[in-house]
Length: 493
Ligand SMILES: *[C@@H]1O[C@H](CO)[C@@H](O)[C@H](O)[C@H]1NC(C)=O
Ligand SMILES: *[C@@H]1O[C@H](CO)[C@@H](O)[C@H](O)[C@H]1NC(C)=O
Ligand SMILES: *[C@@H]1O[C@H](CO)[C@@H](O)[C@H](O)[C@H]1NC(C)=O
Ligand SMILES: *[C@@H]1O[C@H](CO)[C@@H](O)[C@H](O)[C@H]1NC(C)=O
Ligand SMILES: *[C@@H]1O[C@H](CO)[C@@H](O)[C@H](O)[C@H]1NC(C)=O
Image 1: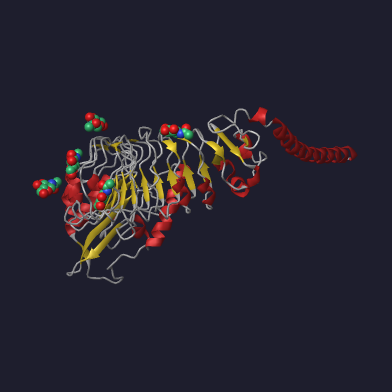
Image 2 (image 1 turned 180 degrees about the vertical axis):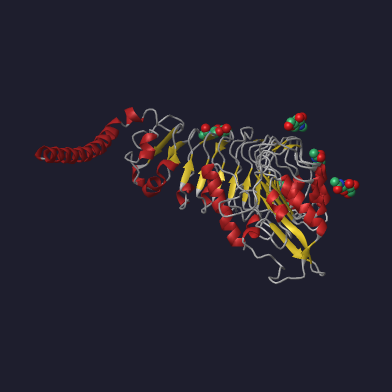
């Protein structure tokens, strides 16, 4: 289970990094929509002749269905027996059915939840007459009829475990009353237009495992609350300010934290408790330095993304990233980082993606980077680096355009390493070889390489130029031959 989750997360993380898309992980055992779709109706025998739906709940379901534009449902004499995808019921000991789950919205092509009439739908207050309701799911339901999240949902506190209101264009604040839903394990309000601050009352939901409030317009600082069982925390793409509250980072069950694209300030908090954390994304905020001396304890961490925190303005302690033995993605772009790149980064041999661009790193690329055998993407552009590029020819060639070196002070290549400016990455960044351009550190080799290294560059460029010309020549000769044959055939007929 854990490894599956890990793999899933990694794939999602990669997708996130590459496409900039966002996503939510809903825990598989918490009433996720997928378990509603094709799963058997738990506890519902096929021949249950004596069972009927609780009359009050039946009326409530009719109201809820009418309020979403699904009047057809009121024709169904017993909603739990003539049920549709999107309603789940359970019998009690007296064989009376109770509604435990309601879902709405066209989640995907293969789900057939009732859809909503988006121009008129609302959530009927009759929902409070379903005292056994565990899961409530509305997806893209009220988009042409923007409305607040009703505070009466707070009355479902004795039963509700999963509340998902995704992409509904809900407006206004998160109702304080949602803090009464103390049995929730999933609260997902992703992509609405919610504003105001995150209510402190949510701190009462001590069993919460997944909290997704991302892609809203929430403001104010993140309250000082702890969720002891929390695994997934998504607050990204809001207008949150203030420092990161330490209590939030003490839940040792956390596996994913995404607080990116807010206006959060202050330093990175103490993360030592987060032994299972796989993804931490704090990018595009206004966090300040210093960086923690050590992140030891985060032994599960696979992706650490801090890009776009220009107020960081600090050096990286040599010890900060030591011991992150599972790290695959490290993003440190645009942070105004200065001084040398720590050589210890070269010990992170699981790294695949490393972004260090748009900082003020000086000195050399650490020779230890030659040990980063699985690296497939490295950005070092727009820094003040000088000296040799420490990679073997094969790695430079493999990374191709995902190795970015342009706009540094004086990077060069050592021909002994097999590198040459026939490699696009080097030639396009104007990088010449170190021996002839041995002008000492800090002196621009790149800008003078065309002069200092002219002979060599000319030779190799004409060599490869001639080769590609010859190739092009042979292709176009073939083309001309074909055209001539074609014209000749045409002429014959
Ligand atoms: C929430 O719970 C408090 C008591 O903890 C109660 O006073 C309040 O009426 C409840 N609100 C709702 C909407 O159920
Ligand atoms: C939230 O948005 C509504 C409009 O939808 C506005 O009237 C209200 O003042 C906003 N509240 C805050 C706290 O920004
Ligand atoms: C959060 O709690 C800490 C002490 O644990 C306190 O110093 C800080 O001011 C609190 N922040 C807020 C926003 O309440
Ligand atoms: C971080 O917290 C742990 C215990 O939770 C503590 O041992 C350690 O000293 C703290 N580190 C810093 C830098 O405060
Ligand atoms: C690199 O930058 C640091 C701080 O920004 C400075 O102290 C150091 O002298 C610089 N080193 C070189 C080789 O330029």
